[in-house]
Image 1 (tube, rainbow, N blue to C red):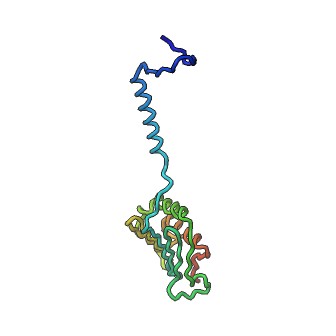
Image 2: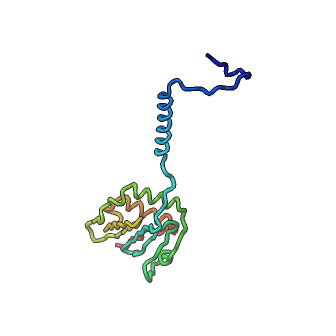
Image 3: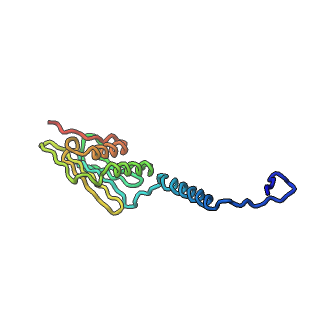
Length: 178
């Protein structure tokens, strides 16, 4: 018996499925695809560990350091520094966007910071050391380059340049005469 669903004189009837197996199959496929889509969505809100710190120490003429935390970058000059350019003698602190720092740290992590060698050596007598220490989630790694320019990982170059840029006072390396 076929019922006319458009007929307003009759109460609508509950539709029974002729094949419950087919209904279960469609339901299972729908749920599977929904869960798959949910897991494939990248997580955009990771949190930086509270003990997070990145320290960049420079040698040679500078003997200064930069400390990057979750919200700020602090420059510490050499103790009793007496450089001709005053900006190298003064401690400074700049507040940075937390998300910007998080992206920077994720970039460093993705580029393999934890897999870098601990020490990069360079033959020669006129070198300027750079030392980068990252502490995050209870894990610490220090990478030392005898010379920041030669024989050092590109990732260390990137970190060195980025902290100088973010500090904002153009505290680039000064070369010794000779």
